[in-house]
Length: 380
Image 1 (spheres, rainbow, N blue to C red):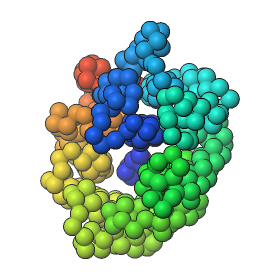
Image 2: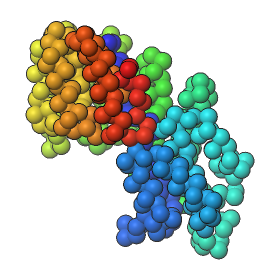
Image 3: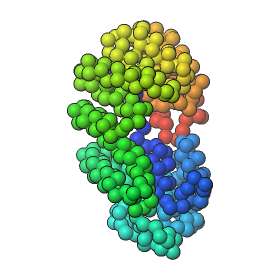
Image 4: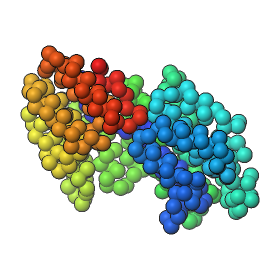
């Protein structure tokens, strides 16, 4: 397994985080109101998304549309966003694209602006389209083989977001009432999406420039530590081990100087472990990963990579125990395709009757996994 497969996940692309941001687009959103004040049964949709019940979301959206339960224009857009996300999570990418295509003349059509419905949104201006729809419009072409279209759309979206940050008023809000902080977060989301696509095609130099640009814009210690770590991972893949070592040293300095949460302390240990792995010092890497697990027994990156190191040390029995224990102890965190693929690979190496063992695992996954889990990971 190469370095690309054992470094930290750069971030699952299709998540409910986008939807959390998108609800802020609506003028009724406030800290004192509930999700259902924003949109019909929005809290139920959000709960289903958090539980990975994507088929239930499709059923709920279909029922709301059939029974005409959505009374305001923005509600139709929010339900369309959830429906598109659900289709994408279920890997029905062509259907998700078709869903987006139902937007008449594109997402920036005037019919999707608050001004077009003064009876519903008095004194409100700008687009009511959830930001998640803009992100999905950029991401989905790559899922049907059109990677260049996705790259082009993400750079267009980045320009759109940066224009929004420039038009904020003296109250740090733009014309639609959105705070500058939210648009900055969205800028980071879009840039990280672009980085992810360039990384997948080993376009490392572009990634370095984008990450350095993000670092120069972010003064928050925690965010800088994460970004500089990403910089170090890219440097490693370019073969610049000294550069990576310097970057990881900067991360350790930030974490040492600041009062930080456990996740950032674990980041330092995982960085050290990665350098040990590159040098094939798997014993030292196991020690660093174990320190992470001692702090946080749900750190699945540390758990997975510790198991890989044990496998490289030809200790298959303990590597399997590490992964199995995590699945029993923290199934919600540990149940992902990479984790399961690694465990099944170890079964194949360790046991003659691995087919029966994998079938047992597959049956358990079928009972507890979210709808979007790829069951082919068990290789049964």
